[in-house]
Image 1 (cartoon, one colour):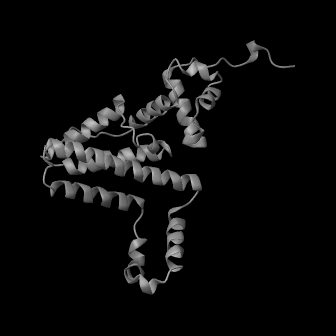
Image 2 (tube, rainbow, N blue to C red; image 1 turned 180 degrees about the horizontal axis):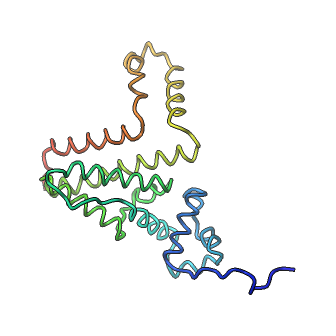
Length: 225
């Protein structure tokens, strides 16, 4: 005999936050491909049609999920002209870490500029930091676009490794084995620099990339309007 309706625990009322939370839970457990309207509705013990009160479609759901993730980014203190580089790196690193906690979410902003309230606050803070550093507005605007691509790509790559269950050491070993199958006499630079090509962990390489981009920004002529 099935339990009566009165014996079942009451369902939590649907809300926008509940839908987003359920979407992020599905993403962590099944990957971004698993995030469908039907699957998220199932997580909430309801029908897919019920979700359309809160999200327009799957893309809108993903956009709102991404914005919820960016709410976890630590924006730090108000821009300080004496510390703006350190502050900018901290915000970007926090953004990468937030996305890494939800493997696959970094796919959402690719070719889809995030304009949600949390993402916009993060973008505004980074622009403010660049202005505090004396960067001209056109360069700051373009830098934000370029560094966002770098940030999203770094996190998306990490999500692929997570999905495949590959550790950093395993990836390095696969790269080494791939090169060693080639005739390294024809690749003298790769042969001599192999240890360096495989050196550094993800955090070190990410920080190095940010340093390159910021240094390049400061040493590049402002784009002409």
